[in-house]
Image (cartoon, rainbow, N blue to C red; front, side, top):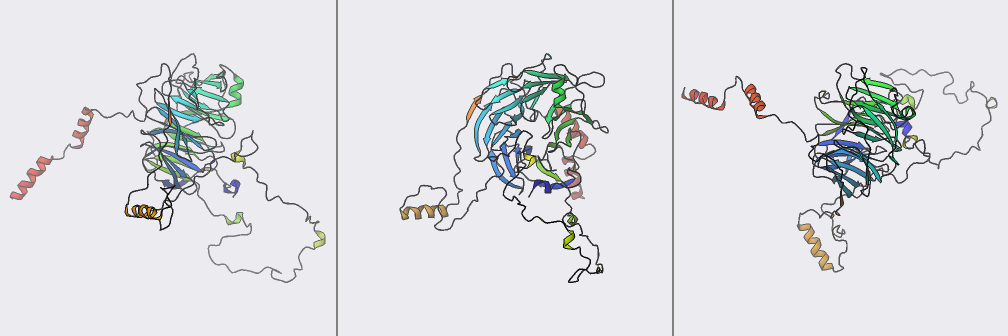
Amino acid sequence: MNLELLESFGQNYPEEFDGALDCVSIAITCAFNRHGTLLAVGCNDGRIVVWDFLTRGIAKIISAHVHPVCTLCWSRDGHKLLSAATDNTVSVWDVVEGECDKTYRFPSPILKVQFHPRYRTQFLVCPMKHPAVKMEIDGKHSVIPLDDDSDLNIVASYDRRGTNIYTGNAKGRILVFSVSDLKLLASFRVTTGTLNTTAIKSIEFARRGSCFLVNSADRIIRVYECGEVLACGKDGEPEPVQKLQDLVNKTLWKKCCFSGDGEYICGKLSQDITWNKGELLLDVVWHPVRPIIASISSGLVSIWAQNQVENWSAFAPDFKELDENVEYEERESEFDIEDEDKEKEETKGPYDEDIEVDVTAIEPIQAFVSSDEEDEDDDALLYLQVTPEIDEPEEGWPSTTDTNAPEDQSQNEKKRGHSQSSNAPSPKKKRTKSQEISINLPNAPSEEIHPLLNVKKPTDKNQQKKVSRTNKGKPSKSEKSKHKYRSDEI
């Protein structure tokens, strides 16, 4: 079915709840692949669950890390998956095989990882309180230069085509570097109305067009145009195309993202604002091509989509839905063998029967093709094959564990009988040991704790106060027992 037929004629944003994806464990972060057919979910036990988003079923479970997975990113072709955990490790995974290609160990926690938009041999890493690092798949890395402010709270992102890297610091300074030689191309400062600087929380680019948004600490989302920023050059003053903020509660935006067509912006408020069920939101992502949003709250992945209403008049203009039976009135000459009022054939124009209709050529879907591309990527991974597991194979069924079975029938019968008698699961495929590379970053903080793990626990005094408040006016267990014995004596 063509993608254009899936789009409704009205608004192109989700409206209502469309089900939940119950993961094996508590979900923390999620990411769609480029075509929106697969959804990767990172869990708190270190596993990555890959969902087939069309069938809403689990396609693969990867035992990725030991610690919680904090960020995920797909490669352009969908064959590789980049993940980072709270134990300062970054891994590149083969999605089809479920194997780890390489693991990189950093001295400080990782806040964000991002594949290059065009190549899977390069990715971007944002360590905590350290400049962003441009990584190669072989372990070579380059540190993104800092500004004169030398602020270490850096957020970074590739632009839409991966030609430039945009960085922002806690003093409101945004720098634009070329990916090839890390040369500074443009810079500007995000300021409020009183010329006070504000910290940059995140930078996100639209899938279509040349716009990007800047989420800052002053609770305002600013949308800029890349061409204007580059035209202003160094120390420029580009004007934002649009400003968005929560005027009612004036709460900080925790995460923002564009819709697939770049027409809408989805913003997730900070932890002070809860979801409609009173649950805290952890992550929000927008489907690349359809008006669908996936959000994570309380360990579940909730799906929000449009209200699909059957509109049969779109297929047959004369179709009318009736609430009750209506007596049909026959029109004049409606069922006549020869229609006298019918237009004569001579008055019609000539009908060309020699028109050739091409039914074999496949035109690329514009939603999956950039403006500088003509064809789609034929090697892109859209779906994952699911191998069925046979619990009790029939007689004569070849054993999955013994690939090179001997020809002796007695040995086969012994093996077959042993497999039927034992209820032990089939042995799993031995995982090849991945190559671990230690990344040496000078002056990197090694004692920092990831924000997901840095949860403030109440002190003993606070706990005592809380207990005293909850038990105020309530009898203790000893007093209850005394009252019980007194009642028995009476």
